[in-house]
Image (cartoon, rainbow, N blue to C red):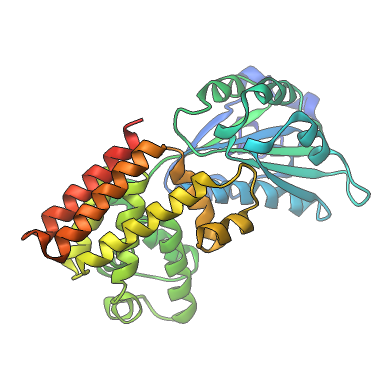
Length: 367
């Protein structure tokens, strides 16, 4: 997340006129697996954030959120009274941004987090770029883009600017997920062997946020002993329903290969096929309700409208970017057919579920 001048710390506290020329600053940093990201952002300074624009891009929500937290924490460490404002890009205007960035009675230092940059209205693009050319010295602007092609033209313009630093997340490959989990356990001061880590991934799936939560729970409950297979089985051995949601989430994101792998693991550990079709049906209902909600609806109100917990709203919003009404209709039909098949209309439930995954993931990309 830091540019070259901050990496050594030599210029961390220097006035701007002593910084190296912008042409020599490495403004683009790709943050891959989180065990790399932790080290990358560990020494972030307030001067890396204030008077600059931090551009967080990529599909990994947890990694993006940690990048945002790192930026805010760096400023708060130097300025405890710093005020933080958050907003969604789809409702952002330059007048709104000016209000959010304006100093208050309590602090002149502010951080502004704008999420969903890909949904920024076209008429606001030039204003954001103009601001990023010369950001206010006492404001740290953090822009979060969830990946994909939407809004790529705006990203291209921002990446060319000297005051913009990019943190780019990348999706983990299936083989890296267990390594991520091991690193998460170590991050909390614990230990887990490879077999236990793979078993936990099989039980929970490849959702990084769920795995991070499990790592925190296990290290809190067993602070003085390594996490073994028996511990994992005791806590997570019966997570068939959770496994079903992991399959559905991967398919609704359009990650076909991951969804198929999750499905095969789910069936291997005895997950009832009807739980898988139920998870898909619930996910599609949530997507339909989120897409039908009025623009600008608050997260809490949307959670009630979609009948999901608040944290799930952000997931549904991210998933909905690749869906239109026709795609949802095709996916709902595929799930209804698979549900009938696994309840007796077909002889091979596994084949019916694989066909459903392919059709649902395909419906997302058929725009």
